[in-house]
Length: 329
Image (cartoon, rainbow, N blue to C red; front, side):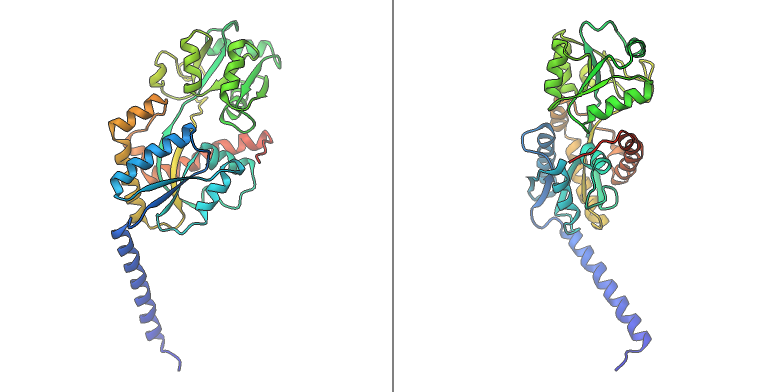
């Protein structure tokens, strides 16, 4: 027997209402069991440490454990891909970063879309990096460095934390922005690059504050500028690149949380609320400040802001990275 068209419409409407009701009920009871937060880097590093601080704060707010699971491999894409394929119910999140959600998309062929396959939850923090030079380099400010580089094309060396790292990409940006040419020397991280900067084996590097500032305070290197529009709290005497004569020469690797695409908005709102409450905690902020992480104002902690910010970062950096022919693995 064929159903009448009106009966079909009534059945479709009933099904839609039932689905909406189920979504609403799920959101009202969310979370009913522990949440998994995938961190696509090894345990013990700076990113993992911050993820665990945030997860602990979220758990206190949500009333359920937020369990950090380190899923490494393929520059973080294995862990990120697992979340892209997870059920969109709010129980599987990814704690990602500039490297995993911008750089990897430009340097690798991924089985997921870094923009389209995720629902933004919240931007966590950013860490503006600093332009540092060896102690005896004959420059004392950023304009002096640029002039010296132009007078000595291809002679200077800049140590990076490896191909595709933030310091590598920042070095390329410095060349493109200033019209200078120098050698990019890859290391296995920022720490060995900083060691060779101190010993004078390389001329300059672009380093994170945790690696860089102890060497600055010990008088072993010179730091010319912070690559951001505002000064960093842990080195307030270091001018910004804007103040030093190169406005817009910015790089501040950041970290954020996403859920799988299709996660209901009301569940996203609950997750976001837990993040916002965590980042407002003075004890949490103190821990982040100790590590030179900077938390943005409340209006920069919304899902909408992260979505727009992430898109802008992809549009800014992908052309630079792809033009340089950087390949990840």
